[in-house]
Amino acid sequence: MQTSIVEIKPLVVKVSEKTDWTFVEVETSDGIAGYGEATIFGQGDRISESIPSIAQSLIGKSESAIGSMVSETSQERERLPRAVVSAIEQANWDIQGKRDGKPVYELLGGAINNKIPFYANINRRTTDRSVDGFAASAQDAIEAGFNMIKIAPFDGLQPDMGSEGDDLFATGMQRIEESCAAVGDDVQVMVDCHWRLNISQSKELIREAAALDLYWVECPFPEDPNDCYDLTLLRDLKDSLGVRLAGAEMGINYEYFEKFVAA
Image 1: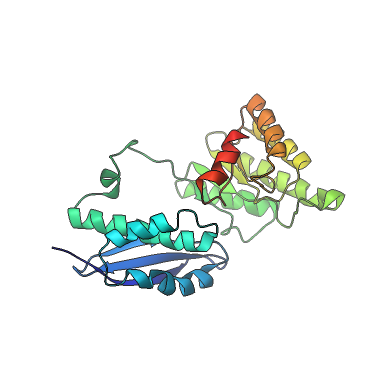
Image 2: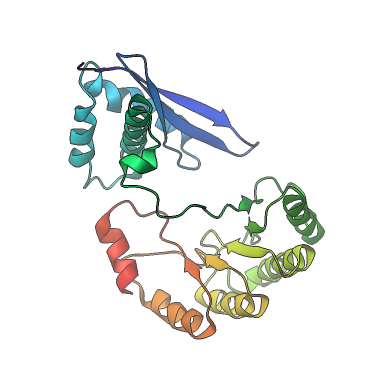
């Protein structure tokens, strides 16, 4: 039986005072609904408003039209339409899995791992931003059953502050140290810097990450795919110390990621 898309609409879930998650619901003529995520932090309203206009051309068409839309937007430079189309594509996979009675991973070729590591990002739930507040929040996550946590400790810091940012950087480092001490050696700790450091601070953090055995350091300084010189310097240091470096989360196409991989 040939089915068609009858409705595409946004769904917004408020998960904290600062955070909304934006999803897309796609419903087909045989009554199956699929869901995909389109969240971009700080752009929830824009995404919700754009979903009807982006999705309008799909209404009444078969699900195969989603594949055509994905191809058409593959070179789109703006993140928002790519996020919406990605969510619609995710929802389509969800629909196919429900229709076939199979988990989506089977449709994608089968499971590679039987388990996936799961960590607690405690940043936005940590309302007490003191050093002790971070440590207490980290302990809460461990008591809830997590053995991996991620923190974002560098509040207010910007990479161009110079010496004015020294105190903010020092406080962030204290938050890391106390959080690690609070959870113990058996818990893996990750640090998300939200691009707040300069290259000198990033190097200091990498050295501290090695000393504390952090699981990874994420987005330490502003990323520019057309200028990866500082990233190359930091990669040499982190490789020599055995520290993992995560980043490039703002990328949306092959060309963007290729430059970081080659750095």
